[in-house]
Amino acid sequence: MAKSNKPIVWSLFAGGGMIAAFVLPAMIFITGLAVPMGLLLENALAYDRMLALVGNPIGKLVLFGVIFLSLWHAAHRLRMTLHDLGIRSGRVAMLACYGVAGLASIAAAVVLLSI
Image 1 (tube, helix red, strand yellow):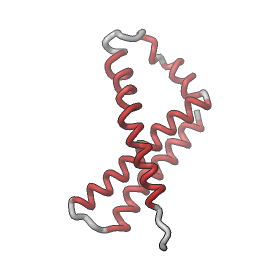
Image 2: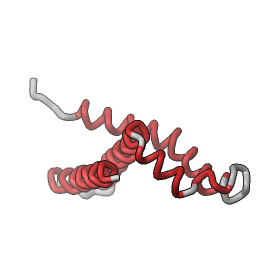
Image 3: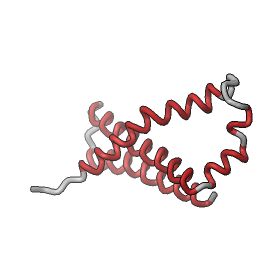
């Protein structure tokens, strides 16, 4: 039986799908609606508070998890969409999609660790 990387790819896709379905809408609601509409205090997203959140190791880990899983979910969905559209350049599409997700994940880690 040949070894496959499908379980790893599918687990990242599923984890990213859960993040995209549950966490991102809450983040969009808080940052895009609740604060501007006055449902939360004005200083809820103040620079000092966000810096403290991102400066905390747990905050960094959570933020990196959201970014990482969302990127890998989007990469897999884009690759499958390209395949459905008839672009069947197998390895090239795979390397392009997952390569961008990998590089962006590394960039996110570098930025978060520098804070």
